[in-house]
Amino acid sequence: MTTKLPINLQSLLRKHNVEDERIEFKRGWNPDAIIRTVCAFANDFSNLGGGYVVVGQDCDENGQPISPPVGLDESQLDKIQQEMIQYANQIQPPYFPVLSIEEVEGKKLIVLWAPGGLHRPYKAPKNVTAKHKEHRYYIRRYASTIEAKGEDEQELLSLTAIVPFDDRLNQFASVDDLSTRLMEEFLKEVGSNLANEAKNLSVEALGRRMNVVDGPTENPMPKNVGLLFFNEEPDKFFPVTQIDVVFFPEDAGGDRFEEKVFKGPIHRITQDAISFIERNYLKQTIIKYPDRPEADRLWNFPLAAIEEAVVNAVYHRSYEIREPVEIRISPEDLVVLSFPGPDRSIRMDDLRVGKGVSRRYRNRRIGELLKELELTEGRSTGIKKILRAMERNGSAAPEFDTDEDRSYFMLRLPVHPHSLDASTVETSEPQLGAQPGTKSALSRHQVEILKKCRDSAPLIDLIAISGRTDRTKFKAQVLNPLLEAGLIEMTIPDKPTSRLQKYRLTTAGKAALELERGKSSKEE
Image 1 (cartoon, helix red, strand yellow):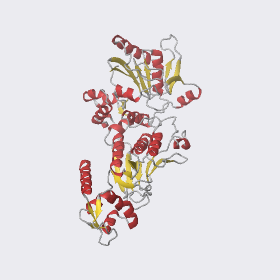
Image 2 (spheres, helix red, strand yellow):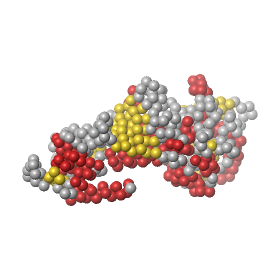
Image 3 (cartoon, one colour):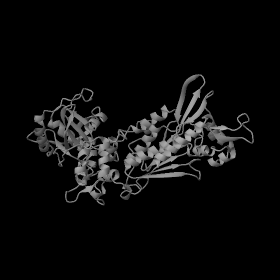
């Protein structure tokens, strides 16, 4: 019965540094309370992905684990395992958690991993050692296991045989569609000891240990979540599983746009799309002041807000709907669009102030794996983080939109009004006495203008590179920031308006081009 967890215990304790809906600490072996909690995790009332019981780990009055743990006696381990089999068999329908013996600070612990069950609702005896068993339904409510009564019991019963899409078996795929390499990479990334055994396991055995394979031994099948994370081309099974990043250099209604499509395992395309946006479209502005040494630094869009917006879209979208996660970037805003919208239990007014909490999550296993990768907390905190990130950056508040049918969800991040990425962002005037300048990654147009200025170039040639027609806006938004940053200079500086005026690259500009060339080489 003993196996290895698909996540490192130290990492688990670090992420759950206090008892909550997904973890419970027990100082010693208490079968009555432990079986009730296992039953509650199996019922997975909020679709959080089940949870963990850590036996041998005591906690303080605030639910925080005490270090070092009290641990379990070596002589207890076999006895506990035998009793666990006996008592778990009393859960109806039968349900057995994964049991792992772990070591923390020289102390032996038993960890019970209880994923959300496929055959809920589950009942467990109030007292597993009693002669006459009274079975009850149990659920998690915050950091406690409680008996489901009244409306909670009715709601739990309504979930009979309803398994979230990501946790269902896929009858149109085989276990051979799962990549052992991708599973090993995941286990190494989350620090699981199971990674050391992975090479010696069949794909079916490894998949069962990671709870992405189920079914009878004569006909094992992968779960949808396994195909989404551990197949190189999940869009073969779930069409349009992709992230589209679309950039409009003028505005969303313009004729010109650039598009990049990300396909592959959903955690990888999430990370790749965010990195792509960071490299190509995030610009930092520095505003210097003559009366103090400190400068203000701001971004057109804060990275933390983008990370949360993209991860939330991947986590909460439906993989049964053939629509991509779409990210639209323009000089005015960054918009993330996904399908469908939030659950009807969430009021949009609450969502806008970061108080919207879902009663039940659409993708419990996707959320679980994203949490292990530390891409999300899965605790309805994403919107709050976006609000905080925009506020810290001095940006306007984000906007959220959906329709009455909740058929879509749109999150809009307005560009910072003082952002000075001159080639893509129309900015307001900086504060009086400030000296603006740009830093960080150059836009595509800025790079081309610097290249053109290797040989002295007139203004008309530079305007043509940008594709703009308004000379005044071009000078204010493109040319002047490059001059002020010292990347280019006038050939006739004492006569700025001369008809013979040209622009040439400076030493700093040459260094900036070398830096951009190095970035391009790495990306290739």
